[in-house]
Length: 635
Image (cartoon, rainbow, N blue to C red; front, side):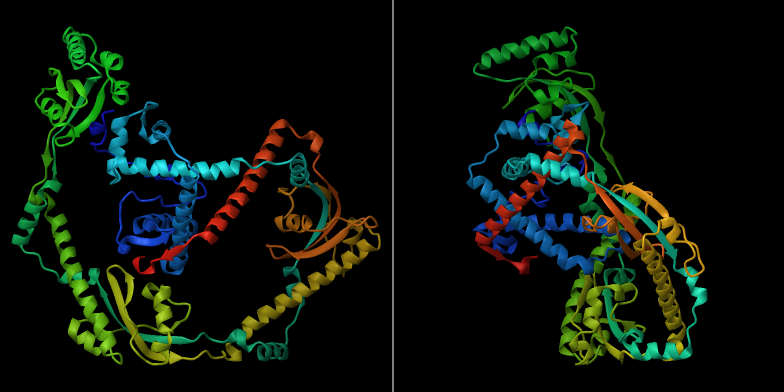
């Protein structure tokens, strides 16, 4: 596709493309193509190479999104913020180091390799064929330029050469492969009995004396949390919005200024055939006149485009360029395209790329919305802008007055017209609403607030929400009265005694097994009860018919000594039962039964793991040698 035409279009961008240009091992945040030389734009300096704040912000956003997807509704940005910041900064620094190593080793990516990578991205294809128009549309929709996008893809490919070169050079020996197969396919002979603990609870008694003794010995367990009641001033854009007035003159002025937002410019969809100049402009003119004559003679425009057009990207689509507005194409090209009626073919037009024959396919006329149509929308925007301005003016005053009058919130309240709010009692673990935020509770229990009885600093909960708090009342941690916790203690002691009885029965069964009894006999008549013995079974690591905890415990047991026929282990199950397992043998995986596919799979897995270790070791060595300067004030 022509560079100019390709560089100018609009459309819908699929953000998953970003994932295709992140280098191996999630080095999130590729190097920015902006020349940001001021230290204010730098997140770090790595061996004199700038790591920009832009790169860091991309990495931060991606890491935050990853953590949020992992924890879902339980995600607390305040709780994870420090971790996310560190991870994001480490990744962009690692990326810079990898890029330096790759370019220092002379690794390069040709234009052909770059084009091949971009052409292989499905989101840029229509009917399985790369579309230059779609490529440009999607990139621009993301706020990118094709130059910037291609720059970052190129750097990603360079880095991948180094990463993949190290990983793919690793290998696995025959012994490695066979050992892995023996372990992976290993089976263990397991039998077990499970003893329901709850069945013992009705048999145990707990006296008042036992409850009191436990209470006296474990009072730290039954302490209330230290608590505070807080006064606070809260300032937010949302709270200021209702008091903001907007008059008709402001609405009309804002609409006039923003009118272009509410107008959809006319767009035209055209097809073209490009004949490049080559070495002979006269020959090109003759060629385009010849093709134009065929169009006029009624031959298929689409077929001619596929046969003659030098614009490879659009030729495959019959010359289709999609929709474009004015200001997108070359001026001469655009003048012709916007002078045609639907279905008309214009005379050949010359641009810097060659001669074009243009056929107009479709027109999307300009559309617009009146002030009445968008009144509520722009009124909300104006109110928000005014509220934001008021907020930033007031938040500076709030921060200053909280510092200048540290023993009271009254001066700030009077100056800003706010209301002093009061919380209930809250422990260090926090409460609901703003008191669920870690930074708020850290401030509430800080020495300045809790001991010195000073106002907190202005606490920024978000970009448009700030509070200042101070201590109103404090409660030390206290031991709860015995009467209040006696039932809790009783439940605990009953559970402990029931577990002890279950373990005692398991011990009886274990002793019978050691004395030579069969499993079925060992579980009979144990303290007047019969249990069910689960007979021996050869189980793999992924065995589903045996409780997972038993499988895991069995595969952690050492191999039996030559003199032993079995070993036993007691363990608690997740369902509340106590189990005794008997382990009596191991069968390693048979290496002679391995298929070629299995060998290849194991070989690739080992090689990849070794390669990752080698790459990590190399990266760590490079990091140890690197000179890295951080700019935390910019983050």
